[in-house]
Length: 126
Image (cartoon, rainbow, N blue to C red; front, side):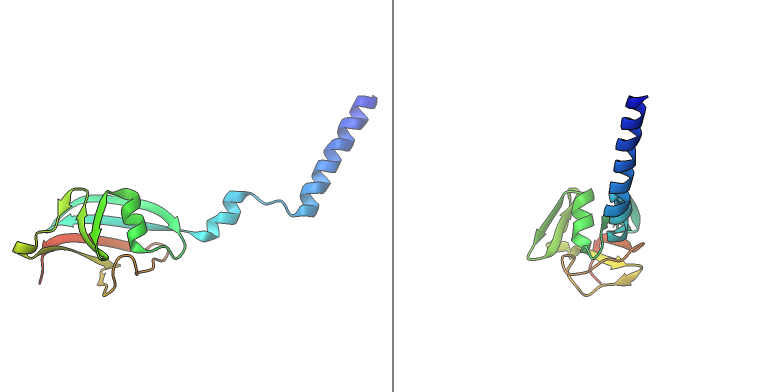
């Protein structure tokens, strides 16, 4: 009977501790700081890959790109993704859009929001 009282006292102390310290689940606490973004790679009109990824709030476009593929860049410009390289002589370059709109910032400058759709296209410059 003494063991039962001791165990119940210890249990009550743990419960009181968690209630008083405001214990929260780390996943719940961090979920406000994460976003989901869809990345699509196209070569011309052909889709070659699509990835859904979870990033930190306010991450840049380049972060999710590098999380999913091997990326090469020069002075902030993307030159190769997953072995698919630009060809300057033929004026074929990587460009990208966010939610279907052209972006006038480098991929390491453009901030992302939850549910953004990023599309990188390797094609002849217009």
